[in-house]
Image (cartoon, rainbow, N blue to C red; front, side, top):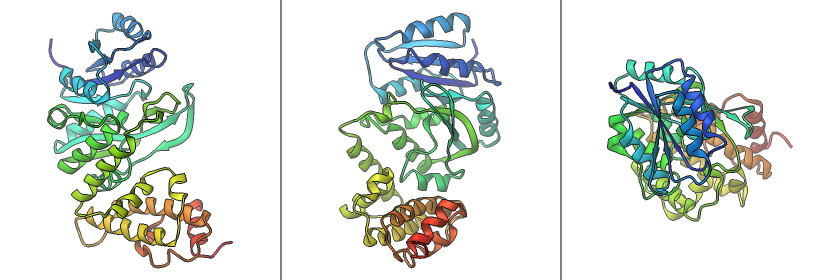
Length: 342
């Protein structure tokens, strides 16, 4: 049997209720030369029964088992070893691919042999599968993605299609019990060309049982280690205080809001501009890197405005301030921080 062009890899653990939707979205693709590998990581519910029933009706579905629960990074590395396709498409067991996802990403990688991986945007959906208006966006270029990966995982893991030989060489870091996608994609963007298609190709499900929503005792320490590595690779030498402040930028708004003051805002502006320069090949900021940095700066401005700070951004990051998108929320945040609005 000849190898398929694409291996779709769906790791699953106790996903009886949702894994069928992930598989169905794969079987509904307009691109048909693929295998769908579902790796069960020791589920104790009916996950394997659901997958077995689907596999009876379509030979492209392969159910594989771990003899015991290996955890996320080891299971994902085993999935890499099981894949036979030239390209490996990642899909979480609670998400869904839109019908043209594989076709569009295969077409892109075929046309761009120097690109090692391509992601896309993802549209949010609720636990029951109904769609939200929110779209998880990310930049398109390698430089802007590398900048963004200093703050968050981009693109979303379920949107990624990666050349199998590249992924087999890179592999997931098994010391990262969480955020292993963030760590891996940072290395891929550092060592090769990673891109993102600027449209939603995946539906990303928000629900309380999602792994990223679960408390984990090592999450903060692992993410700190990952972000510190990315900052040092960019040529920065963060002090403990810099790293602590940077972690506030990577968190949710509530974390940044705690104790925000003029010193933090001034530091954030200078820090974002310097990091953006480090990710730009020329002396001036690359437009897409500047846009990504301005998005982060806008987040700082919103929290500064809510905290009632006045005038602290006038000199902090003039280039990022000029580049802010003309959205109403950002304009209002900027006016508040400049003291132009009560």
